Length: 465
Ligand SMILES: Cc1ncc(COP(=O)(O)O)c(C=O)c1O
Image (cartoon, rainbow, N blue to C red; front, side):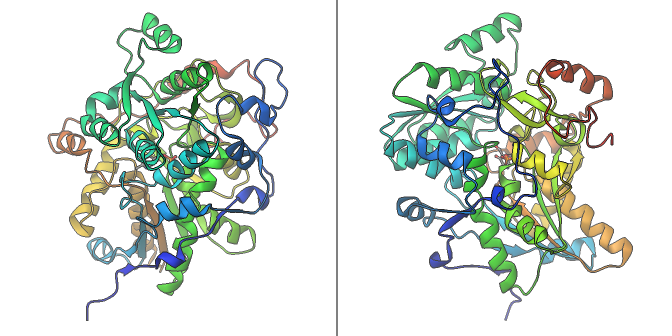
C-alpha cells in the first residue's frame, strides 16, 4: 500500500457556513471613512456598488453566516479541495518537519478566487443586477468572476492590469471563454483611465488603477455593480471554507499545524486558510500565522498603518490598512495578484494585534522555491503561491537546523498553468529581482501624509518597529 499523501473530504463535508473572524477578534477593524467628511460611512454609501446582502456581510459581527444552497451546489463542482502532505518535498529538504498544503488550484479558474466569485455573482443576481464590473491583476480574479457570472447568467466587464494583459494572454482567453469582456487598464473607456494615460501614456497599470476604472463604470450605470476579488470583509469571509476544510483534513492526518502560511496580496487566501486557526489561537492554541508578500510590493512589512484609498484615483472610501500609498505602482513582477498597494483591514488589524506575522521575499527566490516544489510534488504553482512555498521551505530548513519537529501548513492558492512565460523568463535568467528601498517607501508614503490616522498609527512600518 502507498503511504497516504492526499487527504480528501466528501461533498457532505463542504462547510455550510462561512466563519466571520470579526466576532472573535480582540480588536475588530476600525470603520471605513468617508473621504469628504472623515466620518465613518454607513451601509448606504456602498449601495451604488454592492447588493445589500453583501453589504450586510461586510458590516456583520455574526460569528457564522449561512452559505446559500445555490452557492453550495456550485462549490460542490470542485470542493472540498484536497489537502496533501508534501512527503517528496520533505525528503528533498531532508527536514524533520511535516509539510502539508491545501490545494485551491482545482477550481474551474485554477485558484481560490471562485470561493468568493460564486457568492458575489449569486447575491448580485438575486438583487436584479445584469452586469458585474471588476479589475484583475494576473487574470485569476477576472477569470473567476467571469466563470461565476456565467453560472448565474450575468455579464462581466474586466479591467485587466496592462502588464498582465500583455504577459498572460491565455487568462484573457479564459475570461472570454466564459463570456466576459476584458479591457487592458489603464484604458480610454473611463475618465479614471484617461487621466492616468494623459500623465503617463506608457503606464503598465496597477490594481489600484484598474479598480478606479471598474468602480467608475459601476457607479455610473444602473444595471452594473462592482465586485472586488480581495481586501473587503465579505471577500475574506467567503474564503473561510478553505481553512474549515483544512482543519478537518489535518485532523484526518492526525496533525495540528505549528505554523500556517499564505501568500498575501489583498489578504483573502491568507484569511481563507488561517482564520479558523486564528480563532483557535485566540482560544489558546499555539500556532504562528505567516503572511508572505513580494519584496517589491511590501505593504505589510514596509507600509504604514493608516487610512488610505483602495484605488489610485481616490474613488473608494478610506480603509484602515497597512499601505504603501494609493498611487504606488509596483514593478511588473509576475505575481500580478500580489501587486496591490495595501492590504485588507482585517489582515492589517490582525498584524497590529500580533495574531499574524509578515515576511517579504524577492521574485527570484520565490521562483526557485516554485521549481523545487514542482520538481518534487508535481504541481506547477502560480507565481503568487510561490511566496507561501518559499516561507514553507524556510520554516522546514529552520526545523532541520534546530533539529526540531514542526508541522507546517500552507495554502497553494493556485496553479501556474497560465504563467509559463514567467517560468520561461526565470529559466532564461531574465527575471528582475526588484525590492523596495527606504527612499521608494518614503516617496510612496507621501500620498497618505494628509489622510486621517487610525488608532494604532505609529508612523513606522512593521519591519521598522
Ligand atoms: C493564485 C493567487 N494567489 C494569491 C492571490 C492574492 O490575492 P489574495 O491575497 O487576496 O489571496 C491571487 C490574486 O490574484 C492569486 O491569483
